[in-house]
Length: 196
Ligand code: ADP
Ligand code: 5GP
Image (cartoon, rainbow, N blue to C red; front, side, top):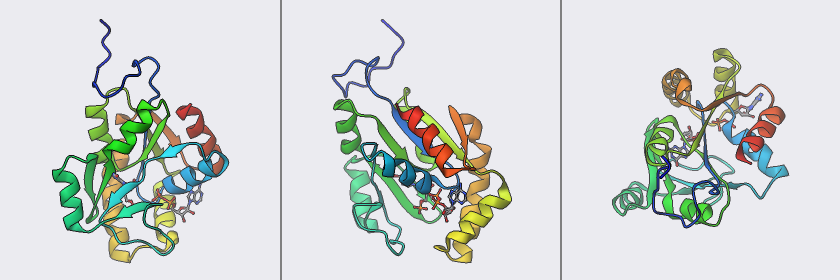
């Protein structure tokens, strides 16, 4: 017997099962930008679409960036065990639909989740072979500039997200790998290499 943890969800032996990769990092660091850049060149990379109670930003479409749900719908997803992990982040709830992820892993395809620190911790606890990647900003001032410059949140929400960011940055050592987002192109290439 090896020490590999069997979760009983997949017929593919652990040695051949592609890993689930989690990408986390503070709000505004560039997670969506990096993933979008990578998927433009490699649309075959599957990204889990999360459910959220957050309202759509201009340009966001239901089922593309997120499944936008109300509080009651989110409660039901939690109660029915339909989320692999979920967390409250800066006043909204976010969660990963479980079945879609398991289907991809069973089909032998790599899986990418772009989720917050609390979610990354839950994934680590339930899937010990998951790969946790932390996207770090080149510095604090640059993170503030990016989050503010995106122009999608009110000053109050930006403050709240920056407060959360301090905790997230302090948790970097919990991750397997850190990528510093100086160049989107470079990080997208490095992330792709980690997925393969
Ligand atoms: P996140 O998904 O982590 O919240 P976004 O992808 O929305 O962050 O990026 C936040 C802002 O930072 C966006 O305006 C984006 O264009 C910008 N950005 C992302 N990566 C870089 C980078 N390497 N250099 C400069 N600006 C960047
Ligand atoms: P945003 O509102 O900027 O799209 O996302 C806010 C934060 O929620 C980001 O850190 C993002 O990675 C995280 N997030 C998005 N989807 C999920 C999810 O399904 N689960 C968890 N735990 N966090 C998520």
